[in-house]
Image (cartoon, rainbow, N blue to C red):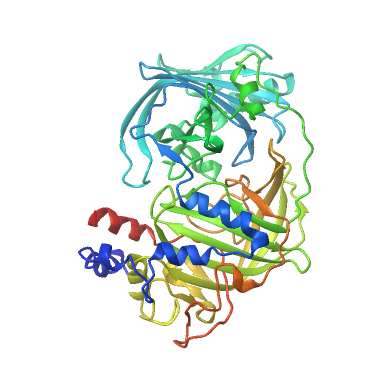
Amino acid sequence: MGIPTLLLPLLLTCGWTESLSLYTSDGRSPRLALEKSLSWPSKDMQCQHMLKHLRNGARITVQMPPNIEGHWVSTSCEVRPGPEFITRSYRFYHNHTFQAHQFHYTDNHCTAPAYTLVIWGRLRLRQASWIIRGGTEADYQIHRIQAVCHTMATAKELNHRLERTCGGEKEPGPWEPNIMYELWSEEGGCDCSRGLNFAMHELQLLRVEKQYLHHNLDHLVEELFLGDIHTEPAQRMYYRPSSYQPALQNAKSHDQSCIACRIISRSDEFHPPILPPRADLTVGLHGQWVSQRCEVRPEVLFLTRHFIFHDNNNTWEGHYYHYSDPVCKHPTFSIYARGRYSRGVHSMRVMGGTEFVFKVNHMRVMPMDLATTSLLNVFNGNECGAQGSWQVGVEQDVTPTNGCVALGIRLPHTEYELFRMEQDAHGRYLLYNGQRPSDGSSPDRPEKRATSYQMPLVQCSASSQRPEVTLGHHADRPRKQSNGSWGGGHSSVVQVVALVVLNVLVMELCG
């Protein structure tokens, strides 16, 4: 079924979506339905509190248009697809010029600098993005790119790589450490930066957020989100961002517990930041983990996540709460998934990573607004629950229909995952799992396993022992089976790459 056919019934709802979508089949608003779906036993109140805090806006202010003037730095050692280990220090000036430092390392804790790229250019903000809500589009022009190597081994390696791509255009002679070499300038010549697979397309999409930590008006933190990097390195130079990288923080108003921020802000191309050494933590998948912020996925998906791992029998549960807005206030649908996972194996490709295989064999879906409900109901055949049976706020088991074609999910499903674990400055455990493929597919084959990570989840409870029905799937809530009967059966699934972009388009067209 083509998109125009799919859009028609949704567009017909434009005149009455706002009034009808505020209520579920039993008279509750989707917000109240979501409140109920986020109910925990008292011992797990911390998980409940953290997700509700996100849904209530987390006291975040978004600047539109954003003011990016200033000095912005990484908050930790970042892992880019490849993998590449990097920290960033970007300065944006009032005359629209910028100077960007990208510090590259040979290790996953950014303790061993390899080389630094220094990029000068000009940036012009354009307009609010109509594709990525809450983002701002921009155009950039690079004036000059230079490189400094920090070890003899790196100098030899880069010299060899650039000779293959630049030939005689490269600066003559073998490269040496601690000397600045020019890769490209607007005066002309070969663009040797291509030998390093370099691109600055991250500047085409940006977003600035402000928040007061711990409700303290004297503790303002500003964060700059720049566009994501394509998960396939070969596509990096041709990709226009549709999500974000980890945030940079303003060097003048960063979180005071951020040691990396202070180190990176004082560094330059001849004195690269060396972050404190730390040991790799063993990835122990147990307990409960939740999102720390409203997360953005490529292709206009906003969501929060809640994972529960049962290490006694290697089973897992995943709750994915999707929204139509970048601060996760307006729910569109939720997914509950359940399955099994393998024992972890140290990654031979990504330093510090641990590889798992996840299997998904159960799934439930609950539409939370009329547009999503209409989308689910428009599909012919029983390929996403019972045809035409979807109602706002009513959860349906789609395991018997082998998933949900409308959301791009088929069951059973296998994903090849990458995880790592860290502790933050406050001693909390953080769990990173693999970045979703930029092309909207899933890592369903070993060769598609991620080489970089999503935003981390934080552990909200060390215990995973709780009745399954108490987390978002209550015995007293109506739940419709895919055969059309009412009951209290079980189910689950994986993260989605959805046609829910239609939902967002409809909201734009109707608004």
